[in-house]
Image (cartoon, rainbow, N blue to C red; front, side, top):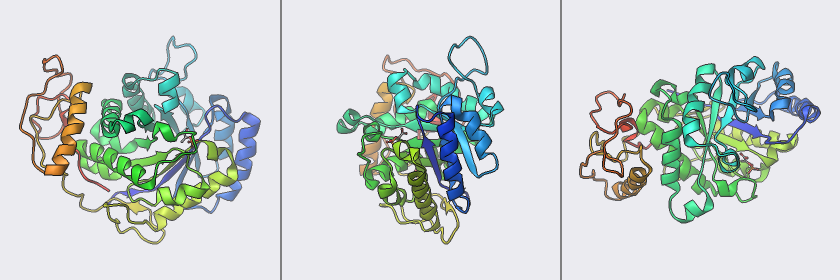
Length: 358
Ligand code: PEP
């Protein structure tokens, strides 16, 4: 039975010099020595990484960078690579944060290379996905999340999917003080989990999916109580050691006594055990359609897929088969479907079956 230990990660963005990093960790590490049942990351800016890895070496706190290039070396002025981070003793890397997507032109195409590059180097990728306020208002949340998750994980082998950490970060909740409600967060995280489970059922039960967006000591317990949410990516509140410690405590508590989330049910983890994935995963939301799923490789067909998902949930009946095609009408086959027994012509056929997993 796969166990999902929650993760709480501190995204310091462009805050904290070397001296400030050392001061933070001198205080924070003392406070969390006894804390169990939660994995902790601090993610300082590049120049502070050596100080962080040095301070954290004999602690249980891990260190992640905030970005990296997919290539190990080359003519990429201003970039850093996975081997360079590894040499510093770094454990992970945030990828696809909405600030990088919005302000530094980070694309899903680049992320599709970065995520497997991080995994291949031995770094834990913390992949951020999330919709803007306009996209939520237009009822496009699932379409956006689906397209980001599908594209960013496209080059990750099925047997490595569970090694990725995903952070659901609604853009409208980041740095605004306006967090998603626990229901909104749980619903989006459950949707992301169902996407991963549709590609690989085991990974859907094992992958850690965090919530991020204005998490603070006052709302952490409520947000992390949902069974399907496995921790938090924290920005502003993580800059203060006392606040970050309180959030870490809330995550540890949530793994010790999971609460029921809306509709997903408890998984039976109790006492000081980490939350666990269900022993037999729930059946798919709707019957598997090996052929005829709209090809999510194209954005057009993926948004159609979102509409179809909603319809399928409502009716619980499979959709009439139709060929995988792009908006131009030409079928594309860029890579074979690796799902056992799949016969779909859709090049992303392994994404074709979202599954209900808590
Ligand atoms: C973030 O930047 O990842 C984040 C969640 O920020 P904040 O907690 O400040 O909203």
